[in-house]
Amino acid sequence: MEATFVRLNRHWNGIEYPATLHNREILDVLLKKKRLPHVQVLTGIRRSGKSTLFQLLINDLLNDGINPKEILLLNMDESAFISTWENASELYKLIESAEKLTSCKVRYLFLDEIQQIKDWELFAKSAYDTNRFEKIYVTGSNSNLLQNQFSTLLSGRYFSNRIYPFSLNELLQINHFSYHLSIVERKPELLILVDNYLAWGGFPEIVLGGMDNDTKTELLNSYYESIVLKDCIVYNKVRETTLFHKLLYSVLSNIASPLYYNGIGKAVKANEHTTRNYLLYAVQAHILSDISNFSFSLKEDSRPQHKFYCADNGLINTIGFRFSQNLGALLENVVHNELVYAGYDLISFVKLNKECDFIARKNNEYHAFQVCYELNAQNETRELSGFNVLGKDIKIASKHIITYNQKKTIGDVTVSPIWEFFGIA
Image 1 (cartoon, rainbow, N blue to C red):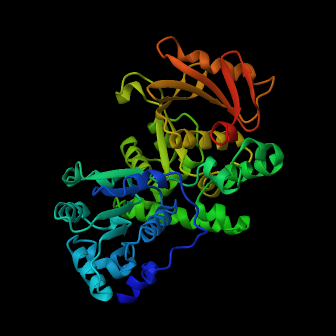
Image 2 (image 1 turned 180 degrees about the vertical axis):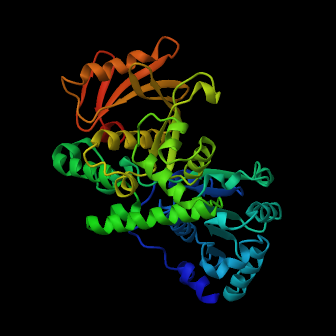
Image 3 (image 1 turned 135 degrees about the horizontal axis):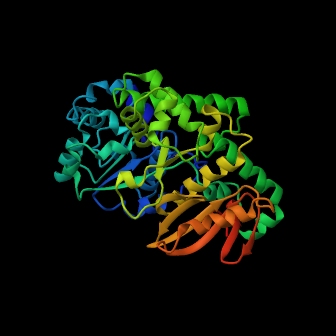
């Protein structure tokens, strides 16, 4: 146990975590709340950088002069902590053991992968109400983290933020594309960067690891297996594991295509109820996003079609049907994720005789988006006509066509390359 404590808490020696850690866009948001006593919950798909954010937050505490031994980091996935998985109160014993080891009282507690602990909210509420710690940070890889019967116990006592793989803007910043002149001077390098992002996604280890493609593929497979096993199958006690894998493979192979639950189920010989549940598990594990066709009504029967998007393009290309020749679908998947990163909500699509890829709200205004890898004389009319399906009932503040590398204006429609619209304008 002591060896595990020491391994997880390298900061106890007073040395900060490596300067090579890249700041994330979310970091400033978290630092603004660091002096508030509320429990800070970070959710997101595994390997998206939640643990790295812990290290950045610990570095900040060290810079503030906090005694490093007053900061405790526990990864609840560790087998050494199995005794706590069914009994949240056991966490106190772990903390007391760490305090005995360091001879210091813990002031800042970091709990990684908290979903392992049954009814962890009971511990968090007790610790919060008794002012046991100055701040508690927790991470979890399932959006269902605060959905059980005990979640109301933390009402008003926590903040929750979602962590994603690197956004396109973060990727540009990491590679020092910080102003427009850098793009002009290094355009070929920029487009290679975008190509890699479309093919391999934004998981930090994939982006920063300097690996060859075979190693990236092997690592992404490992990510996928861990996410599906731990956060879908084990977490939800799925018995039909083969069916679950078939269903997820089918959806990953049809990213950005309008689908119906019953049609998805028939393809893998599953009923609609099971299909809905299994896909919900994948959404809760942050592998998939599920958006419905646009309707002012929130009733399910008025929004029967669905489009699924993956949290990361690397998983699509590694696990699903190879998309290397379907650059449009890969670009559309990135655009969906970037809309989420940029703060758009109520994301949906419209499909009648024509299709508008995305309707999304921001600052209480709706915006329309088409995604076209390369706009040309053959498809321009089709892409523009997609905006016509919106009708007069939807007041649209702006219309955009997002492309790989084209920029112009067509009437009231703005055509923008993805690296400019979501990156450096």
